[in-house]
Length: 317
Ligand code: KDG
Image 1 (cartoon, protein in one colour):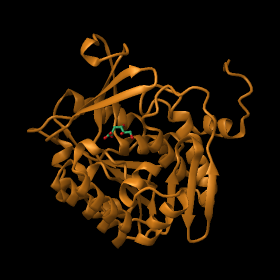
Image 2 (cartoon, rainbow, N blue to C red):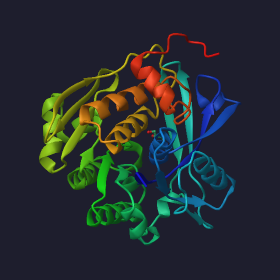
Image 3 (cartoon, rainbow, N blue to C red):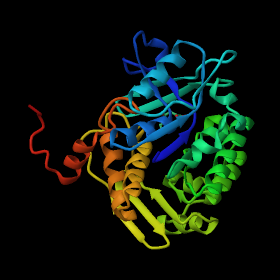
């Protein structure tokens, strides 16, 4: 196994019309969850991944499991809960460039994940454990589950990758700040966005913010700067890695997960950190050009074509 991840995945309903969702009659339905987005992204690039979660024993739970399994991700550690439902999430397109996200996930099946669901032996088989700041925000049980997964990873020399993925709607600012710091300190690689870094440390330059994370303990900090790219701060390397131009952003949600998948793909293959980040920038950019959180995740040929700009024609025949 290259990467094992753990977290909640929901059914995502997107209003087909723009404007306030109260007027929307038609919705598309897809599936989305930061951690499974990363697992799917890696799987599409040819890596072995596993996703640990809990789903409701309902039709949405079945759909999510089948979808993720169909993407080649191992779902053997997914459990089903008879007493709680699968979470839902809605995307409201206010204007072409303004999105509002609404969760229906309080007390969902995933929020009831518990440390006893974890199999240390399973986690020990991975090269990387990927966790985000969403899971500990779901419940106290989920927070403990993430800490236990991290503990199992560390015990077994599995590198821990942490994406803070701040979701303000899910917890208080104080609690979020303290847990995101705690998990950043435990991780080997941290992937914060600039806004998340400023949320934790206050407004500053990318260089200072990356150094602030580094001083907490991780060996590698990769600070995401949106379309500008990323700033790397590690024991061996330091500096900016430029982003890729995007003609038209269709849907920005999921770009950070694409970035994580691209970076991890490079790190699994042992390329240097800056090259891995370049790959992350490319996957993140490609994701924004499709509707949905996982729909744009590229397969390897497309990624290489995008990076090398060998796609001379827009129409593939
Ligand atoms: O990063 C994209 C995710 O935010 C999205 O797919 C849904 O997991 C999700 C969340 O909690 O926002």
